Image (cartoon, rainbow, N blue to C red; front, side, top):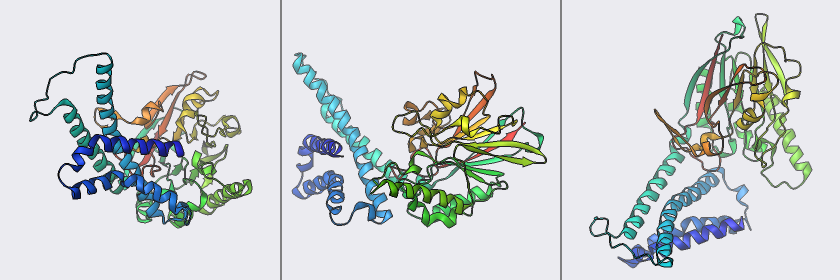
Length: 413
C-alpha cells in the first residue's frame, strides 16, 4: 500500500498548492478550516496506520470501519476530479511555454475571470457535486432495493414448469452491512415474490466466513418452494485476507461449508441437482468461481458440473463471474439455457434511465448487468445470461444510479 499512499500524499500536496491562495485569502480562521478539511482524509489514513500498532483496524467496530473507509474513498474520488481538470490545464500551459505558443488573452466573460480561474472554480463545483452524491449514496441508495422482473421463453421447457419463478440475489458482502434491519427488509421482499427457487450467485462475505455469523438467522428465513441454491464467489475463498497459516485458511473454508449447511441452502461445487414437478425435471448446475482476469480464481469446471444431467431438457447454471459465460459457457458443447451471474455490482455507480445505460463496469465486462442472449455456435440454440447488480457493496459502501437488485425470472415455454 506504500505506493498508493505516496500517490495520495502527492495528490493532496498538488491540490493544496493550486488552491493555497484562495484558502488563505480572507482570514486565518477560514484558512485553517479549509486546510483541515483538505487534509482530513489523509489524516484518517494515518490514523488507521497508527492505531494498528495498538488496536488493529480489523477489530474496529464494523460501522466505524465501513463509514471511516467510505469517507476516505468518497473524499479522494471527489478530489480526483478537480486534480485531473487542473492538471490538464497546467500541462497545456507548460506545452505552450515549451513550444513558445503565445498565451491567449481570451477571458471567459464571467466577471473578467481568466480561463485558469474558471477551471479552478468549476473543478471545485464538480468535486463538491461528486462528494455530495457519493455521500448520499452511502446513506440512502445503498439499501434502496429494486426488484427487476424478466420473462424468458425456453422452447423445450416442460409444461409443468411453465411459469416457474426464479428469484436471484448476488454479492451480499455481509462484511459491509452495518445493520440487520435492511437485510431483514430484503429477505421480506424476496419472500413476498413467492419464488419456486432462489438462486444466490456468490460473494456471501468480503474476507472471511465469520462476517456472516451475525446474519445467519435472517438468511435462514429466505423461503422457496423447491429450495435455495448457491455457489461461491471470488471473495468466499478467503483469498483477500492474510491468514496466520494454511490451516487457518482451510478452517475458514470448512466454516463457510458448515454455514451453508446450517442455512439449509444447497451449495453447488461443480455439481448439480434436479427439480421435479409432476414427473418432469429440469437441471440446476453450479460451478465454483471462474474469472477471466488473472487475479480471480479459475476453479469452475463445467464438464464436471454437468455430469448426469446432459440430457435434461432445460439446464440452469449458477456461475459467479459473467466472463465465464462469455468465454466458456456460451460455446459449451451442451446448451445451457440460462446462466445466472453477479460479480460486477454494475460498479455500484452509473446511469440507468430510459435511453441511457452507462457504468464504468462496461469497460471491464462486456456483459455487466441485466439480460443478454447469444446463439451457441456448437448447438445453434439460443441461450441467456442474467447478470445481477448485487444486493450488497464492497469498497465504496454505497450506490449511485445502480441500485441493489433482487431479480425475478419467470420461465415460459
